[in-house]
Length: 415
Image (cartoon, rainbow, N blue to C red; front, top):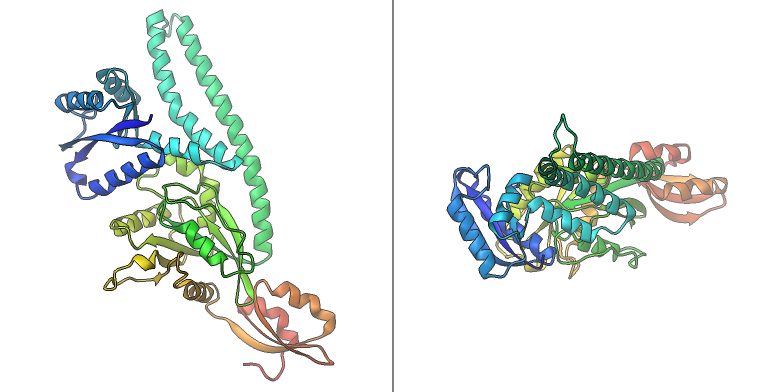
């Protein structure tokens, strides 16, 4: 589908957020390489249960599609299999999909890792199966197949269902193996006592650009992640080890949110969203230049609640600060991934949030315990002051729990 007519019913009780939703759907079309040739919008108190649009508007939609030479029709509103078929019949057989199918198409295009590809295929199969069964049920009746008299068509429907369900089961088994490996890696990370920070927020808010800006401050700026100005540019969770103040934390870049994210995708990308659920701190990334920023932030908070990540401490980070209005009053920290404005201040805020009650002490560590210093550098801020005959004199800062290992080596200089 290269060119489509965008259709929607604007419900009276949801009129307030309708334009935001429509703009998002336009951007989804663009992300999928589809040109919106025209728009057909009906104001109503309810949707028609058979065709979503009322009969007069449905005819207008069909005429609009013909006049613009559209390849298909995309509905903002959810479509049942039967409704999509009726609308397609009214529009001379054009392809008719809804917003959920559009998002699935984008995910299919963007998936890079084996895990993302499998997760997307599972969601697609579960979405397509009802339509295939509906098509073949109609064929069953045409062939004379019934519950009491099994015809060839009905047999084909049963075969299709079994094949799809077998494929879905096989894919889910593959996912379990991948997730098992991930859990092993995650257990190793937890054992290392490294804190984790997850970038979350609306799709295309600038999460990947922010991660790359933070990476520029480290000794490994070459480990950048993919970024592009489009919805769902990132589907895979990227993980980078960030060093700051002589200690480290893990930074996760997660899949972006949208309004009414299909449950199939939330379920399919459960392991990807686990990065947000298991984080010690969430950075809620908001595009300061987006006129719909407030609505998108609200959707982000609702999604965090839905995936049970709403109790995790958060920092609000406003990206694209170079485009901000001087009189704008914002809660949180403003950064620019382009100019690097605010990145150092953000890292300072992250450090304070991860280590709010640090203990600082002066220590004299024997040379025989040099390995202890090396092991602790990931979780403590260690500053070597000098080498003496007795050992290494240093200043260490960190949580009480992590500082216990240095208790035997405290000196009278403790702060």
